[in-house]
Amino acid sequence: MVKIGIVGASGFVGRRAVEMLHKDGFTICSIVRQPAALLCFRNMDLEGHVANAFDQKALEKAFQGCDVVIHSVLGSAGLIRGSIAPAYYAAQKAGVRRLIYLSSMIVHTSAPAPGTIESTPPIQHQPGFPTHVAKIDAERRLMKLRQRGEVEVVIFRPGIVFGPRSRWVSELASQLINGTAYFINGGRGICNTVYVDNLIHAMRLSMEASGADGEAFFVGDRELITWFDFYRPFAKALGVDINHIPHLAVPEFNHNKKQQWIGTIRESEFIQKSLALLPEDFKHKLKHIRSRRSQPVTETLPITAVTAQPVVTEMMAVLQQSKYKLPFIKAEKTLGYEPIVSFEGGCQHSINWLLEQQ
Image (cartoon, rainbow, N blue to C red; front, side, top):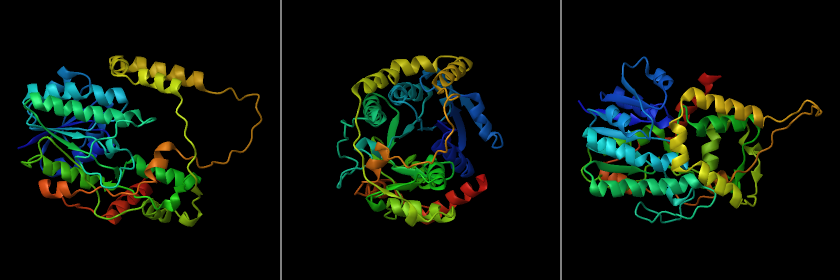
């Protein structure tokens, strides 16, 4: 029986991977950062471990007996970079055969240039997007470790991963309801969607594919989807007239060098690793103190009605101007990948989940 360790098992992709692979008969080891995160698997009778992504020894213990490890960790730039070496070294000491790393299309920016394929050099210069650059660095570190190590490596670069419990779904629903959703360029930009089950399916195929070691793969839905297409089924389900969603211009975005410098320090590997070592109760106290200090004093201000207005973020401005659907020909040829859920089906599953939350 193949045993699969999943780092970041309580996250959106990780949790769905646990559900699908467990159902398919694999032995699953769920690896999470906090004990409470294991509660979501309490009815599945799974092996679970608590391990900080920086803690090589804890990861090594969690990886014992695993044939494959899926590394699906979200967080700061420092976490993205700093979690690579501990995971790889732990996998090697535990005798793991293959490490599957969840990267992202953002290594080519959120709007990859037409003609981009997996071998296209990543875009290192991405001002305002430190986590994008961190993903590039993480991939490179991982491949260097593979050159010297024995654990095989497979990298996935999905685009917009959506499905039940996805922030893309929950945030879009919230924006549609409160009137802050918007389109850029009429919503005609390409939305590189991949329904989460399709991504997990590709990962499963990569566990045994002979030509996958040392390779990166794009995966996506079969259909060509625009941002208008992506919004439409959710708007309809929520009773929102999609024709009333405003079309906004792209504002000018200024990158404050001082703020970027502060952010670079705050999200550095050293700071993030140091924060990770703090006891959880102490971190909660710090967050409580910071939140209290950041609360504005409003007692003397008049109370006025506030109408929500859509605000164009730099990330969405780039995403909605995309003109290119990433190809997954390589995944088809090397992994035998074919989407197992249609875009329409993925939207319906997501909508059903949304309606259950109400």
